[in-house]
Every structure is written in structure tokens, then in C-alpha cells.
Image 1 (cartoon, helix red, strand yellow):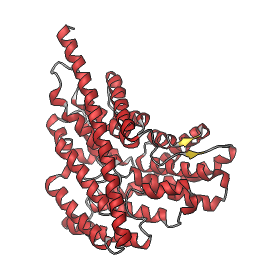
Image 2 (cartoon, one colour):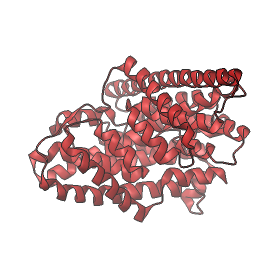
Image 3 (tube, one colour):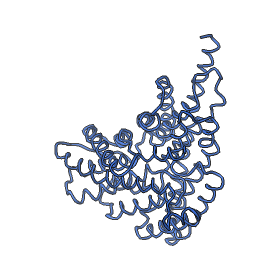
Image 4 (cartoon, one colour):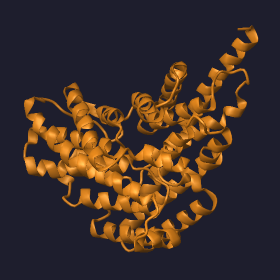
Length: 422
């Protein structure tokens, strides 16, 4: 290899690492504006309880109209688009349709608007598409002699998105291997890991070394945890699998009345879903709205703040949000639903010593069941646990719940990605 080629190779790596830092910065800003939007909605809702009846459906109709007219690639969570972009035979032009800077910033604006309107959505899945699009956008600046392929940039970007969104570099690496990188090449490992770590460092430097829902202090884990593991696996696995199956079915054409209505009148349908979410929110004192972060954070700090209706309300409102057709993710709502299920199980088991552990198990189990990414799910929750005793328990519940979920549904992201490719 000549000196010129070595220099171009070095410049390629430096540019990729710079792009990862930029992606991390954008994801942090995305997180900040998302939280501002959620707080703004709840502040308005606290003063005018009736406002969601107008704001949520109108916002949903406007977002779906904009999405379908100008930004069709921003629909859904964004992870299926990222997976589809990694297909072997996909051209750069096709990748550009799914992942472009135009799509990335439209995704940020549309998801933020959905949260401002009171929908139940997360920003973590969209962060994968946004970060992958930013990394892919740097492709044109790479030296031609560089050994980095476009799909490598997409892979690195998607993983960096999870890393920065959850402030968990390890989860980003595992997510890249488990979900995005089914076809990744061995030689991308060093660049992948470095880029993810750099993206995580940007997140940590700007937001501090925080954990997403705070710290869970768990101690004294023994054989009594076995029954809760199986209970959480079965309940969360079944509910999560059904959740995924509904989302997969909703993405296909249906010859039912509701299916035809949704297909022929998508903007009106979005308004209808928004109105149902508004009614759920009024009936549950706001539990139907937002990503679920605020409620879950309070619940984990003080379990007495929980309510029996939270899990079913959040479950239904998140389904309605996805069915409405607006862009948005399901990672944070899934963790929140899992915490709500954990509250129900704690009421049933009545074991204060295992209370915090059951919250962690339920959050891991439900997220793993919905996404069918057990390793990523357990690592994301593991980052919140202040107690190594739970590592084996979290791994076990993630794997078992994922197996239960497969009885009801195929892997959601891969299934939706395959439909995008057709």
C-alpha cells in the first residue's frame, strides 16, 4: 500500500470519527427538544384539561399529511428503514431515499411535533435513523481510495444513535451486532466500536453520566427471584408479542372496514387515533401522553406513585400512536409499559424485598418481547441497575420473554424492513 493510500485510509477513519461526534451531538439536541416538547404539552394540559381533544387530533392529521406528501421515509420508528438500507443489493440511490439529511431533520421535527401534540412515542428508534442518515451524509467527503463502504457508515450510524440516545455505548455495540449488523464484515469492528464510543462520549460530556430512568438499587437477590423471572417472561412475552403482531398487521393492507378507512383516509384516520388518545389521557390523568419517561422515573423512585391503569392505558395509546401513521419510536414507551406491568406484578406478589427487581425484570422482558433484541434490552436496563446480582436474572428474563414473544409474532423490525424492500 502506497503512502497516498495510507493517508487516504487515515483521513477516512478520522472523518468517520468526526461524523460520529456530529451524530452524537445531533442526537443529544434531539433528546433535549423532545423533552422540552413533552414538558410543554403537560404544562398546557395542566392548565387546559380539554386542550388535548383539539391539539392531539389536529397535530396527528397535520403530521401524517406532511409525512405522506413530502417525507414518506420518515414513517414509523426508523429502524426498519435502517435495516433495509443495509441490504446487500441496495444501491446508493436507494439508500439515499431512506437515509438522507433531509429525512433526518424532518424526522426530528415530526417526532418532536408528535410529542408536543401528546402522542405516545419515543425518540430512541428515530435516533437510529437520524444518526445513520447523518453518518451516510458524510459518504461524499470520503477519499475514493478509502476502504469504508456506504453500508458500513449506515451500520455505525445506527449503532451510534442507540448509544447516544440511551447514553449506553455498550448497548449501541450490541444493537449493531444483534439487529442491524446481521451481514456486517469483520473489518468494520474497530471503526464501529470507536465511532460508537465517540458518540457516547459526546452524549456523556453534554448530558453527564446519567442513566435513562435513574438508578435502581437492587440487593439480596437469591433463589426467590426464579418465580418472578418466569412470571415476567410469560406475561411480558405474551403481551409484547401481541403488541408486535398488531404493529406488523397494521403495516399491511387490510380488507376490513377500518383497514379500508385507514388506507383511503389516512389524515382523517390519524385525527381519529389522536382523539382516542386524548380521551385516554383525560381519563387517566395524562398517562396516555408522552414517551412515558416522566411517569416511569417517578414510579421507580417511589412505587407508591403507581396506578393500576397505567400499563393498559400506555399499551393502548402507544398502539394508537403507531397505527395513526405518525413517525415515532417504541423503545421508551415499551420500557414504560414494562414498568407499569411491574407495578401490577408487585401488587400481586406482595414481596417488598423484590419490588425493585420486579420493575427491572418487567422492563427488560417487555422491551425484549416487543423488539426481540434480548441482548440489547437487557444491557439497556442493566445500565440502570446498581447491583451486579441482577445480571443473570436480566439475561434470563430477556431471552425467555423473547422466546415467548416469537409464539405470537415474528421479529418486528426485520419483518417491516423486508416489507420496505419489496
